[in-house]
Length: 433
Ligand code: GLA
Image 1 (cartoon, protein in one colour):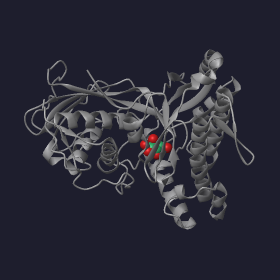
Image 2 (cartoon, rainbow, N blue to C red):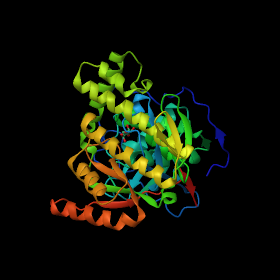
Image 3 (cartoon, rainbow, N blue to C red):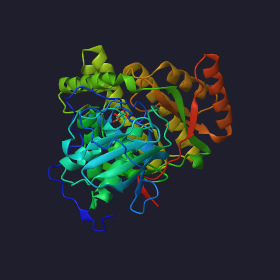
Image 4 (cartoon, protein in one colour):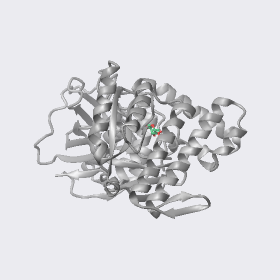
């Protein structure tokens, strides 16, 4: 592979908050909802080949994420508080002669794709391959001379579970393609490039949280991100200090087919901000401001965004300051007290997502209720909603009981039992040997 590395100066800065105006063309979770359809940009070599084992192969891993707090706040320029998971996507890439990108995924073995780098254009590729192809397109738009490559994807992230497998796919591919092309892109710029791939190439009008989480989170921390300024604050997040652990409960209800609802929420938030006279709802700090909106739906949407953004800041303050809020200020608190407070905020956020933002689903509501009744400190749905996962903070000595009653509750209702994932605050994307 190329030994010389160049630092890239972007030809045109990519706005991380730019909103795709095209209709939503794809799911929010690329790996899960792969389609076989690849239209007019197939090359004449339909076999992507196997890159494994070659001396020139580069391997990059990018993690999925769970979001401790701040849901649907990223595109509103509010606060989010995600942490990276130990699970993620690995992209193995090898140089390939010619101007083709050959893409293959272990999770979609029947859907390999070969695309011509020089004719990539938004809408030209659909299905799972739209994400890596979109990354190549977005890198080229930013001035990177992307070299031909064979890319193999593998993932241990659950699919369609709201833990950001699409951003993990984008970021692992972006890092691999950059290395093969002899270019290093600063991670914030790379996050914006990957977001642009998702917004403008794939057509999903998502925010910046997932790419920032995959590229910038630190092990043992959650990352407070001010989406207005893109300022990052690393916040120590170690539930074990409070005798607790974070658990992801995948409700096995996939969330991808409702991307229209995501766009609709986004439009409602933009309208609410316009009526409140602010550029974005994130600019408003007091949830009571939402009551100025006459329309009850817009009022509820705004109340959720403003309050969830405040909850993200509140959790970060508690963890950073070792304190919990009391009337007129904050008071030093022990880790168990802090995590109990966080748990209450999680459950409060779930009610807000369910009642005000209306993006929850029955299995998530049942999960939160049952987990809390069995001793969780608190729980809430994570991700875009309408399917996916719940994040719970659970005392370690209640963990087995919570898992057992959840499985029982799902089985009793005739639902597919949930999958459990230990949510361990992990590091960001990295090169693998
Ligand atoms: C999806 C999007 C994110 C974010 C969340 C909701 O996961 O990809 O940008 O908007 O929904 O917080």
